Image 1: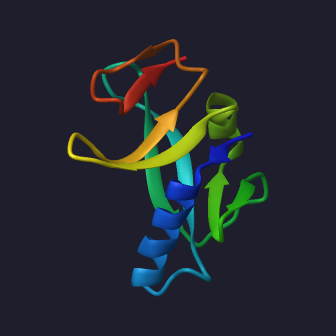
Image 2: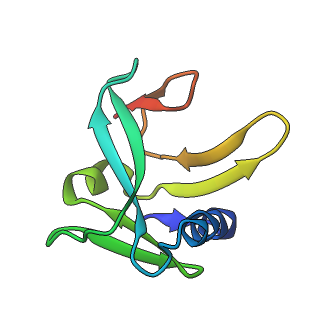
Length: 108
């Protein structure tokens, strides 16, 4: 479904450990309406697991995706980039037909 790179898993773990939530929370990946291309990614830390959620374990970190978002995120890769030009989570989504210049919104 979704591939989580080692860099992304490590960063998720660092952030959750810093806040004392490593054991109780995971990173929720969600697709919501909005942005200049129609859909946008929403990332947040969540301690809830819904009945229809999918949970992915990678490098000691958990990533949670709801059923509706999973349709848009299937085959995607979650990475973390930290360079001089950019820093943050990056989603490579093969389902995106069109993406915004900022990389935060897409059309499917």
